[in-house]
Length: 151
Ligand code: ADP
Image 1 (cartoon, rainbow, N blue to C red):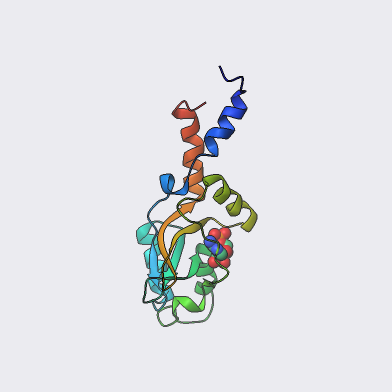
Image 2 (image 1 turned 135 degrees about the horizontal axis):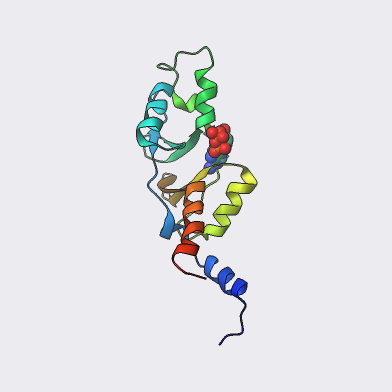
């Protein structure tokens, strides 16, 4: 018997959760794609955040639902405006890496007030997008904590 309280055990458990154990598949769109194509991809892939990449598949930006809504109520032709015009761009993108703790990512989602972030891998050309962690990822882990009898 360790003498640890239930809450201490739970804390230890949660601090072991790593990004790579829970990350999901990232949906990426090339920066030259149109805003119209980005909207189509968001519906087809059923995600709320798209990661935007250059021709080397390196991260250059992020597009959220509201970014696309803002563009859609504007006057531009959605078929001709490239998505890189409306995206939030590097270096202002919050990212994580697969070895990061999930709890640190959850804290970033809250402090930056965003729905998700890309899991990246450092390459010679830039940051390669290898996964995504979203509020849904965190919600699933929260539910698993109970159903898997972790506590
Ligand atoms: P929504 O805009 O649909 O509410 P978010 O809250 O995720 O979705 O996005 C808010 C703003 O933050 C958007 O302009 C979006 O481009 C930007 N954003 C989303 N994810 C990130 C991220 N990982 N790093 C930096 N900015 C982001």
